[in-house]
Length: 100
Image (cartoon, rainbow, N blue to C red):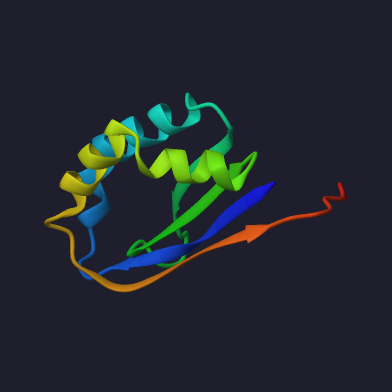
């Protein structure tokens, strides 16, 4: 399994509201892709300028195919007017998962 996790810090408070509908469309389209286990964006409870990212994919190939989907261009277009002061997003290959 591949886990993508991280966050982006939007330069202005309220920027997420400007892209909320595009984010909802991006999440729905991504979840419908083959190989997508989960795809989530969330706003940090203590800092609404931080959007957290959490994705789970069956394989690297599924993740790479995701980047080529048409809905990715719509998402990039929606984000073009949003300024980010920080972006930290990483992908990890997970060999073991345990429930707690």
